[in-house]
Image (cartoon, rainbow, N blue to C red):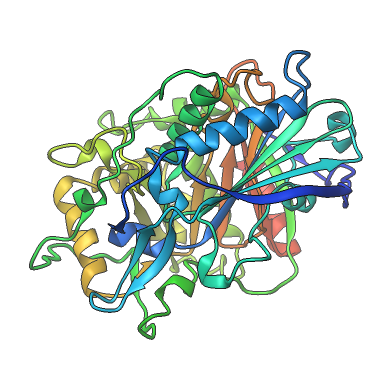
Length: 448
């Protein structure tokens, strides 16, 4: 049965990182000066995302060699990914955020830690100190001249190292970021690109005129002053004391949930993601302050990749954000009393709703209104993005993870470390202590 990380493991709060050098790197050959259109999905996601990729020591690749190879590979990869060397700019004529592909460069930082990789401890548990393995901004540059991508290589005393990447989410979604890593790894091995990126963001341009043909309760209109779109948060962070725990579901737990789900409507698509999302939805909705109000409606949001759902499908190598927010809504009474199979059906229906017509309608909605995903909470899944599957010259990452900021309204799914199979999942939950107690009780109750 699912286990809970009851208390945080001992966490090193200061990794004692010293920055040795910080510079801009430029494309290895000249790139075209141009303005790159950003889709309405890209524009909403104009905030930084940080990931850290940990590697064990390799006798043939000491950190100094890794630094040289990664810096060279980054220069090379900035040619097909020319927008990563550009800067975000507001086009005043169109009142749109764009990327000015001007070859201004990406950030490259070399650092060292006084610890070994083993001394850092549990890599799966979100340690706020992992922020030291990434760089959010380049200090010597003005706010409007910040790179869209900064790569930091931090060596550990054992010879292992971490590759921390900060990138603006407008540049990639999870799938296209993995493709970027595969290309970076391939170039670091002196091989050609693994995948030729498709940078044409016009493929997700709104129709002219825009046609909103569906209601979109998953989107909320906001009144945002012109020119401030890039600073508006997708979810407003509310400062409050939160407990955070990791709940782990094993392969066996997930298979048991799937078996429960299959006992109902045979047409429902039963996947690991759908059953895990449904299980979390029940626990989260029924543990909140107003969980005793069984008539209250609860809405869970989750991302759906629209690449294969459009007509014609987007190229799998599309570099931009090609995910939209699906939703499922029902009453707390239903979440408490309805069969699990029926609830999984609702989550499945939410994904099925994302047809070509619905996706185009949502994109057109973003052309007419300034707004963001709207629901009780969002499930953000890093579970099967496969960052740790990328093969570098020095091997695969021991673990890859986002740098986490604890949020009550976002629940993270991410893979386990050194799993015999990759089907288990870690669920990071941040809640006020009373709600966390209820969540934990319900988590085990609904697994039984």
